[in-house]
Image 1: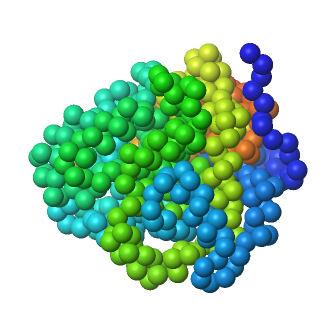
Image 2 (image 1 turned 120 degrees about the vertical axis):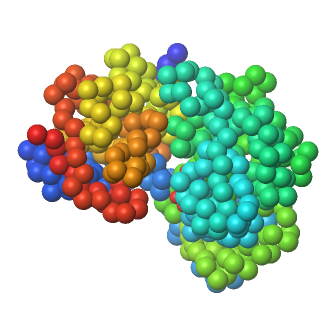
Length: 457
Ligand SMILES: *Cc1c(COP(=O)(O)O)cnc(C)c1O
């Protein structure tokens, strides 16, 4: 087997800025030991997120120049609409400025008090948009998906039995739609099998409930199906994606993920009446239905990106570069969620730093050390992000303490990934000298973005 190479050559480069360790010790201190507060040009390798951080292709940039900025009926809209329809075969395609805008519009119409939305795992903006309407967001992930150490092919699957029990418990009339998130971002970027999508669809059809895909990473999910699910190895990723959407009645999408752009999204659906209501709301909050909060040039870039993301050399490189980092980490005994998902490596901070208790934020300690040691920016997904307090002000930690290293698409090469591994190994070797942290400032909501920390004694 030969090395899987980056399936592109580089036409335009963006220099990254090197800093010294002494500078980084000062910079992270000035940032209150919160990497969200760092200036991005003080970061060498930025693995904070894979959202909106993709490198666009020369054809996408050509599309930016070619974009039609007509207020109504732009030709860029029709190209965008055709690109989305080719993959989803859904009737009504509504552009939005990003994924959460599609969610906001959809749930404003179908949500509301007394309603329930089941999902494998709601992404945080999806949950927020469901709950904002007074509806309840319910996660029905299968059991293996909840165990970081279990290796399984489709840890993003929904528990179909629980779904049917849930429908019978709350009543089908209170479930305006059911969602499946592909891949399951909040659950480690784990894929959902075609069989599971079919099984969920069968239950939904039985009770007349529409099925929607949260389709942000549909191409990565389709590639996992091709590689892992019997019967799909000879199908093209496009055919697999088309089959996934064939079981759906609608979809929301953040184009900042698998459409390989820096901004954009859409809502797509078959129900003409709901589509009309969504468009009416779109005009109030986003814009006219043929641009929906985007410029014509953005629509061109999305249309082109949706073609490129289904290129199998691209997907092979994409999934392999994450698996490659995962293999090196596992071989060195560094604990991660296994197997690696489609867009990120999740370090298991509990096993990495068993001596630092959740109330001293082991994930935050790793995140700070990765920056100091190598200028790498990652994000804590544990007690800082999801911790709550009980009545006595004692921390209630979430089940897992994780650090996410999200890999931007087409941005870093194998040597960047090798460097990330070397720094991780260095931090792992000196894990016994790492200190815990305490919070010295926190906002009442979403504290991880702005919290300030100090290292313990
Ligand atoms: C990013 C994301 C969203 C929200 O999209 P934005 O473009 O960030 O608003 C929704 N669902 C999932 C699974 C995501 O990863």
